[in-house]
Length: 98
Image (cartoon, rainbow, N blue to C red):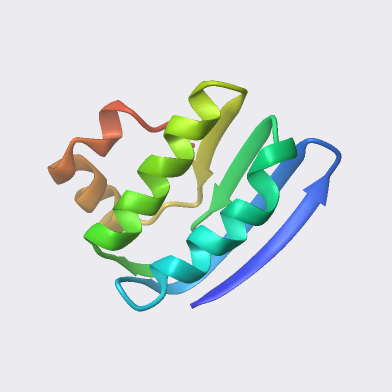
């Protein structure tokens, strides 16, 4: 997995590529911990995300819960297979996907 961070004042874009699974989820969680404190707008660009496991879903959910109290979060570029996982797990109801 590759994570690219773009920080513009209180707006953070994380571009996540590859596989977000049990092995790589802690890496994304650490990247989020570095930026969430001062973030009011969080964007996940998932255009090149190939796979997400339950561990990856947990990190996304944790980020959403954090942003619910202090700003907004959205996911962009989500492909059909990842949308299907979000749909099956009920995440479509709690995430903003563009």
